[in-house]
Image (cartoon, rainbow, N blue to C red; front, side, top):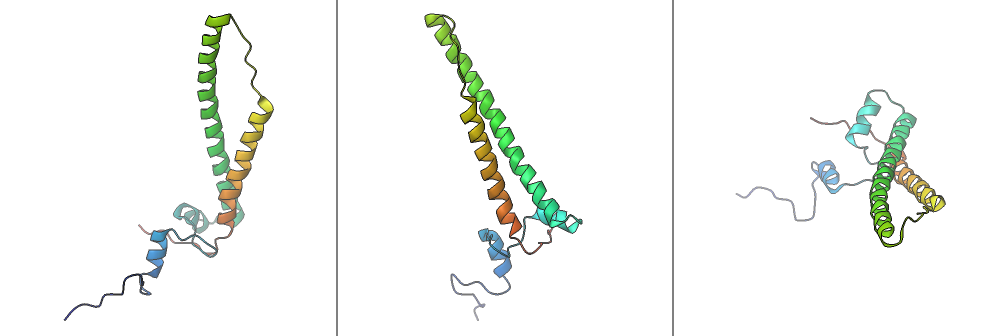
Length: 129
C-alpha cells in the first residue's frame, strides 16, 4: 500500500506554518524575525523594538555613507593628482547640499522600509533551537 502524499501545490495543515516561513511570508499578522521576537520575549515594548530597528537602519545608512565617502575621496584624490600633473593645482568643489540631501533621503527611506513592516507584525514568533 502506498503512503499518503499530498497533491503538488497543496500544503497540509501541519506543514502550513513551516511552508509560510520558508516562502518568506511577511504581511500583516506575520511573525517578527527571531531577534525581534527575542527582544519582545525578554520584555522590550513594541516601541523599544521599533526604535532599535530604526537605529539599525540608520546605522546601515551611516556605514554606507562613510564607505561612499572613502571611495569618492580616493577617486577625487586620483583625479586631483592627474589634473595637477596636466595643468597644475586645481580646486575641487564638492556639492555638499545635494550630497547631504541624498544621504538624508536614504536615511528616510531606510527607516520607512524597516519600521513600517515591523510595526505591522502582530505575533511574536518563539525562536526554535
